[in-house]
Length: 365
Ligand code: G6P
Picture 1 (tube, rainbow, N blue to C red):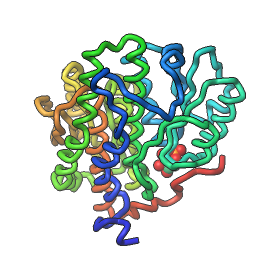
Picture 2 (cartoon, helix red, strand yellow):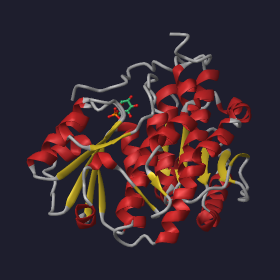
Picture 3 (tube, rainbow, N blue to C red):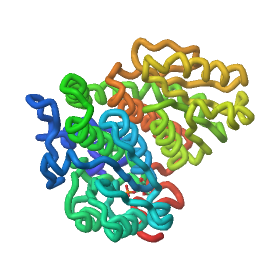
């Protein structure tokens, strides 16, 4: 087991560090710079079939659900088609409406999650065109869907998912480019995103170098009982995922919120004992997050900002990640928050790879 950890003390830290390679593998052979598109052979769909998709239904659980929420931004923003994300158990039981030309997407690292598998059966029963995006090759969901895209992230052992999330986001973005090019995404926009995806492994390496400085920041917050993570737009699912990571491995109550929702409840809970992590990687919405940070500071909450280079905020602490395209910056921010949650949990002496009461794969309802 020690050998499998590749010199790291935990699988989680090893898998966090696997990400430059995992993301590279999730992209290998898919980026078509000449035609400014991607090629995803496992979909088994011809250009006409791809062009006819005009609605997407995504379902998943846990971290995969947070990746799906980022997918929703990609599909609506880049492709211009409606996309609905549903927790898999809810999809299964709420009698979902599958319209003509809908592509249903099951998202699962393990390919064995009971609720996601049941949702696959429901989607098939309703006649949806279905694909699976899984990591585990030959898993039940991958087999039942019969077509899709593998993440190629390598085995993920730590209960808290890391490289599956970043590779899921990478694959969803690649799929959005492919579908977008049959609709409103022009050549120049697609070329910019392809370039951004290509730069990701190196940029993730840069984020990994911040590990020690992130640990120093977390030293101040190891005794807190509650924290909030806030973001807007593409940063909102990252806030949800950051909070989920902290909950899973450090046992600190953490909530991810849309920054615009602060006024609708959480502000009542803020004081000097409740830190807020604000994700601010988009220049266009930076001013709005800056005013949210001020709102938190005026309630005495310590604020930790995850910012892209060049963005200034009045936060107490900052984690500065490389500047990236709006579609890939969330991946870099997520890696920074994985390190943040790891260090808090480690300083609190938690059992990181095997958190209490949690399983890597939830195969019962
Ligand atoms: C469990 C794991 C999570 C994972 C979720 C969904 O809760 O602890 O890390 O995100 O299941 O798993 P899946 O394999 O379907 O992505």
